[in-house]
Length: 364
Ligand code: PMP
Image 1: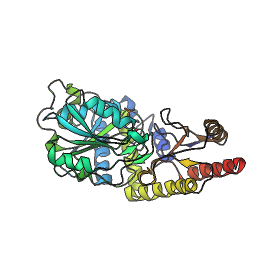
Image 2 (image 1 turned 45 degrees about the vertical axis):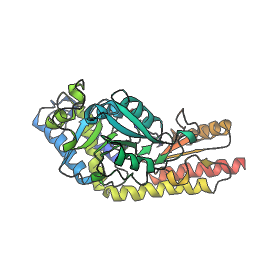
Image 3 (image 1 turned 30 degrees about the vertical axis):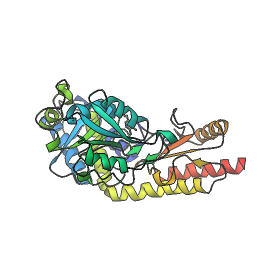
Image 4 (image 1 turned 180 degrees about the vertical axis):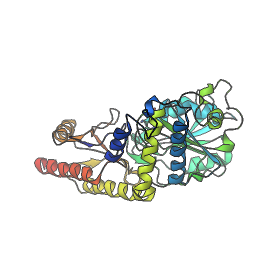
């Protein structure tokens, strides 16, 4: 078996021990006589799987009992519409635009009501988290249904290190690329959601954690598809229809792996150690430079470049020869990006750092 050092932004590296556990259970789960893939979602065996996944996630994240946990499909992208359709009750929300996905979420919300951009970093090509004073003022003055942020910007390698103080206005956060990579205080948010394919499992599951009082008895928008009605999904245990049964099973395995390897405190320590290794190298390099402003740097996605596109391409090609995969930056950002989610080991990050050192010595 030759597994590469996988720096993919998502779908991303998963822990080998979890993959092997899944491999062993693939033909027969427990004594059920069948694979999880072959099981009815209404069977007691599957009910136990989804309940265990939710219970483990609640323990790992410390999710209070007045928050509902949903396992939905349609990717993080479907929630760009699901959130305004459910929560925009007075017709107005505020957005912080800090990257591609944040912008898409704002554009989608604007189809459903008055979605205002309260702060943006587009003027500096999304290399920072902007000042949040205007957000805090709007929470007092503008009668907003919620404020929306993308907490970690996967493409540009930036991350909110402090949250806006929204007072009583619910804070909604796309945490797709920082989900489970550090402890968060769930009570600071009205809704958190994440695509599973970075830190929580395989693509095809979106975890939505929403405060119960925000979802009311019906969605804000009368045309909200029944599938996307958070109240119905909450009351039906994410089983209004057939859920992504296998994907949720994989999520449950990952939640357990996190719990058994030290929980979110340990995840954060490891992720910071990996990020510091790369950022220290970038700060001392004569060839490479980090693309995010220092106080906005992400601990999940490290973005950097050389002085030229040709050198970037040479670096990426040389990396591939050394078993270092998926470090090409996103097409809208260029350069390189190392996504160093929970399952990316310090050993993999050291291999990347060694190639960066070697490449620099060849070119400086
Ligand atoms: N938000 C963020 C922060 C992302 O990184 C992505 C890409 N994985 C998305 C939203 C869109 O996710 P999906 O492809 O699951 O719709």
